[in-house]
Amino acid sequence: MHEVRIVSSEFILEAENLHRIYEMGSVEVGALRGVDLQVVHGEFVVILGVSGSGKSTLLHLLGGLDRPTEGRVFIEGEDLSELNDNQLADVRLHKVGFVFQFFNLMPQLTAQANVELPLFLADAPVREAHERSSELLALVGLSDRCDHRPTELSGGEQQRVAIARALANQPKIVLADEPTGNLDTATGADIIRLLREVNEKQEQTVIVVCHDQRLTAVADRVIEMRDGQFISERAGKRG
Image 1: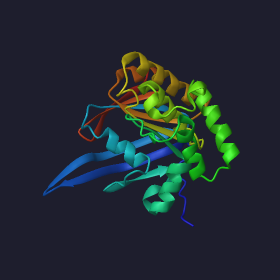
Image 2: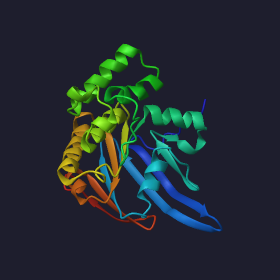
Image 3: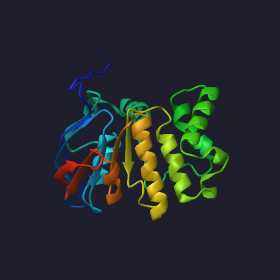
Image 4: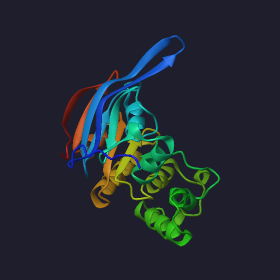
């Protein structure tokens, strides 16, 4: 059994002095340079930055998709640096839902099967997985598209499936990487409204990294990032 350190009952996620250095041949590139972050349960945080600012790297570290060169991440008091790969995969499966810019859906599976996939990985019974996936596809407005494969769906519909999949195992935290970046303006606005609904009605903590200023309208807090560091923080328009 690995030890769980209770950092604070207030924060669902904490990051301490995060650094991430990549080796590019003989050159070291510092993607993150000493980032600290504390997020309370139910908060909607938007991290803004241009391409190359380090925001996607940060999201990968927060969700346990990558490990920092230096520093630590805690989810519900659990230090991710102390977990082995299997334990980290378990955290990702049960506590974190991911939404990616390019959807990352399995092309050979239907919308419903894509949403069911994390449920089956968590050993959910077939009937339960089917009912849960149907419920989530209804939540994102795709009840009539359950049997369609990704190539038969629009970009906005694919992103809605991706959001439904992210919610499958009722994670405490949803991490979204440029969720509107591959969509047209109107469809992006729909996705923003859906993320806010997820945050408010499903009571999920949401952290979005993006360069889309429209997301500040649904944020409790907005953090700006540049060159691997936070440079400013302010209340969002909802905060």
